Image: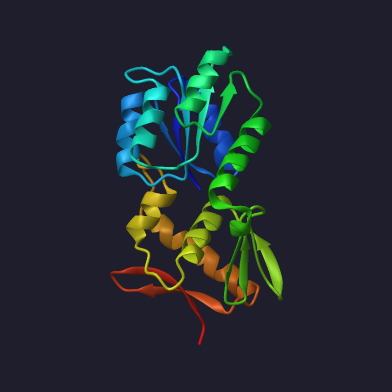
Length: 224
């Protein structure tokens, strides 16, 4: 799951990135409201965390932009203020939830899980293709022959493939979806993680494979 984090306090932003990354979220950090909107226009995000008080453009304005496009993307607002008026304004503008600073990391993660569950629905927590299932809550893939808990990028890569079975996904799309727009990661990292996944699929006797199509991309296919 890819999250846009708009927080101008750099130390807090770094802490949040660490927490979210350890819990298998991909995070794109931005530090003012105008930058947030630029990223929203070019990126494909599953959720956003917006600080209310930001330079150039405040979080409420960014939230209103999101909703003006018709997007139902879950949005969590962060605020250093505890006044009821600020909370009401955020919720009335289309926020799914809010947290008042300082907050506990466990509460942050719980609120993210709750608001994204509303979007995806509990039935979507399990993906199935062939004899393979992916538990999106536990980050575990399994067959009747065994199970494997996946690391963050492995999970996100397999999730994308299983959401689009038989569909070609280019290396560039993997990079855009799973790695930050500002990341210095080399494109070869995609091949590396696909190799990890292939070995793990073999280890549990999955009857699906990750097929490479030259100059086009990769797709999840059932073995013949």
